[in-house]
Structure formats: C-alpha cells, structure tokens
Image (cartoon, rainbow, N blue to C red; front, side, top):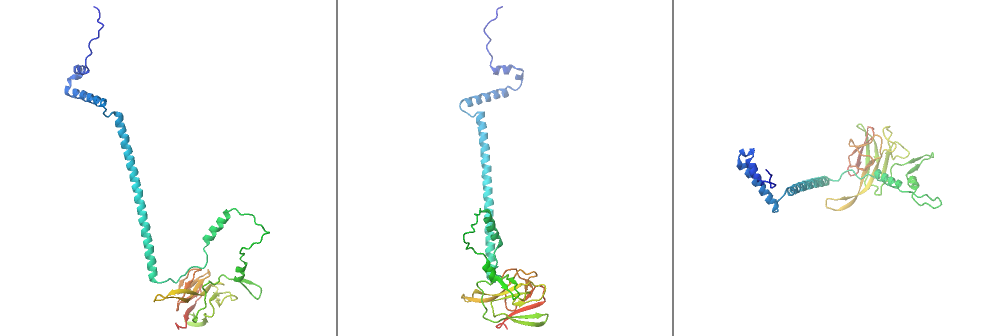
Length: 297
C-alpha cells in the first residue's frame, strides 16, 4: 500500500490539550488560561505594555525613590541649618542680655591692659619670616626705629655707674590728682606710717630703693612690684553731663607673689581702679595700706 505524501491535518493545540491525559482536570481552568494568553498577545499587538515597558516602569520607580531620598536629605540639611541659626541667634541674645545686665550694674573697676597682645606680634613675625627678604645694603642710611631712645627713657642711671631698666612707663592719660590722697600703713592694729601720694602722677612700689617711690623691705615682694597710677577718665554724671575725673588705679607688674586689694588678688598687667577705703597688700607682707583722701577723712 503506497503512502500518501500529504500530511494529515494538524490538530489545534486546544484539541490536543483537551484530549491529553491532563484533560481529566477541570477544562474550564485550562480554557481560561489559554484565553488569557490570547488576550495578552492581542493586547501587545495593539500597542499594549510589554515586559520591557514594565521594566522601564520599574526603573522609573527607582528614580522616583532616589529623588525622594535626595529631597529628604536636602530637607534634613535645611532643618539642621535652621537649628544652627536659631542656636546662634539665642547665643547672641544671651550675650546682649549679659552686656545689658553689666551696664546696668555699673562700670567695672577693671580697665584695659596696657601691654600689647603677643599673639599678633608672633603672627606678624611669622608672616615676615615667610616672605623673601632682600639683602640689606649697609651703605644706605637706615632711618627705622632702633629702640635705643625708648630704652634710654626707661633706663635709670645710678651714681655707682649701674643702670636699671624700668618695667613700667606712664600712659598718655596720666595726670596729677587734684585732691590729697594718702596711704595709712598698718601692721596688725598699730599704724606705723602715713604716706602722702598726691604730689606726682605715679608711684612705683617695690624692694629696689634706688628706683622705688614707696619702698617695701619684705622678701616676698619684687624689686618692681606694683604702681599706683592716676589717670584722667571721662565720666557721666547723674544728670547726663560728661566730665573729666582723675581716678587712682593700681597695676601689678607681674610680681612673684601678686598684689591683693581687699583680700582679693588683682590680675597682672591690668589697671584696677581703687576706691576710698580699699586695703592693699603686697606679696606676703602683713602690712596693710589703707587708701583715703581729704574729703573722705
């Protein structure tokens, strides 16, 4: 029997599946599955979303999340910056409040230090060292300040030929007092001396009798211990008028054991205003110097 060259008609996949061994299952489920696949193919053929488009949507979601995280970081930085600004504002208000409180309490007895800041000098020296220096021409005249005149004005020559360099020089506002200030010297309960300190604008106190105006023999005191300086200051009266007043100040010349006013150590190299009735002690000496003037007496 000759074989027919024509192939038998191909059966539909739905029929093969229906007649397979799995056809015993529920046919409604299998037909529903195939219908969903057909709808999906038709939807993609009509321009619906494909799997690649779904992947693109996933990347869009990632970009959206990343942008949201960046926005949260920016908001967080803005909040931190605003918190720092609020803290700075609060600190500035506290400083202003403390300054107003100090002004209401009255002027302080401390005044500015007469010596210069060392940090600025060091910074200037370091900057000049870093700069390239030109070779000095010794043939040209040098009119820069040598410091010899200032050293000469601070140097005291003695009769024996020795010299002493003073650690203190008076400020421009130095003035002689117009009222009679006095120092009552007590040792224990006994008054041992009375010093009139109104004849000049400054009085050097120390152990070196060759230069000291008020000599102190106690070994705990320095050769140049302290200075009582009269200074002209501008003061506002209770009526708002500004007038010049000459007031006494004391300054410690970086002594070894310090200077005490009313049993309190005063800062070094800073003017400290004195009031009538103040008790001054130098070093560890037991002598007390009570400051008074004619009007107070």
